[in-house]
Image (cartoon, rainbow, N blue to C red; front, side, top):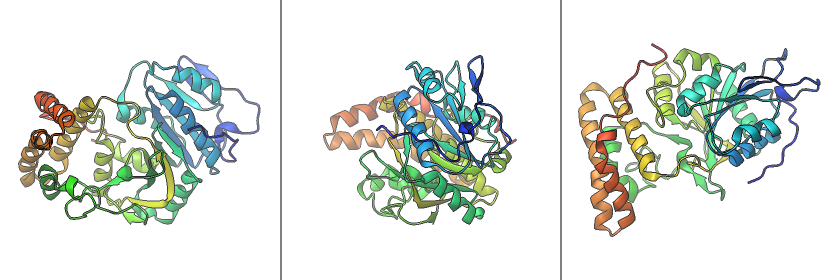
Amino acid sequence: MNVAASKPFGCIAHGSRKDHTVSIGDESFPPMQDTVPAISVIVVSYNTRDMTLDCLRSVQAQTRRDFELIVLDNASSDGSVAAIRAEFPSIRLLAETENHGFAKGNNIAAAHARGDYLLLLNPDTVVLDGAIDRLFDFAKSTPEAGIWGGRTLFGDRSLNPASCWRRMTLWSLTSQVLGLSSLFRRSAVFNPEGYGGWERDTERGVDIVSGCFLLIRRRFWEELGGFDLSFVMYGEEADLCLRARDKGARPRVTPEAQIIHYAGASETVRTDKMIRLLRAKILLIRRHFPPWQRQIGLMMFRLWPFGRYWGTRAFGRWENSKTWGAIWGRRSEWWHGWPELRTPAE
């Protein structure tokens, strides 16, 4: 999707002065200005050149609040860096020589931010109808939330429900292992993590806001230590939100701030993706389940891929069965989850 760019009223990097970007090595630094932006928009990209460009165009076209754009590229091989530099010479571009992953990439980018608020935005997104401004206004009206999110749509404008989640519990794992959450997706009882049939069309408190469109005060981000680098990929925003809740935050989402999120653009191998997701969720169970529930939760979750293998096989879904069989066969890779590292906040 190609989003027409327009010069925003609020973009700090696009002021009226005829300053030029200064480049040092692989980093591009826009000229420093006196005004502190309200929002630092952070985009971490990896081999999503065209989508990243559309994302940046939409940010500029749809945002009127004072903001700065910080893009960290995780050593893309698709020409992303050159394309971003050519079209957006005034943003701060961090061109990394290694792939840090999502969590570390955002932490590095956030260390360069000057805004009062940080907005984490995936590169495979398109901002709609002033969504960043609307989310900022929502944050101002509900400061007690601490973390804010919006409503995400697929490319065809149908609901993408992955904008927020409820935390894992023994009951949600039971529903998942028994296949109830798949059979009864619209049931809040049997699909509690997905909030059942809620269309994300009302304002609501949630446990977890997706990292694809997440607003947080920079001071609070720094207090939390940013993302925990134990989570190499997936689960980092769940851990962040759950740690934030321990400090009194109550994340909220609003349907007034909408974006398109294509989802999964930088990773297409389903087996590898699922193995990373399993590792993340096992670490979340180890860290955030009550001690007396931890071993039960781990046992149930570890058996889930095995159950999916036999379930898809029984229903003749051979391709899915083959995938789940491969995931179960590689269980030594995910059985213990991501290794526990010392959290940045400690």
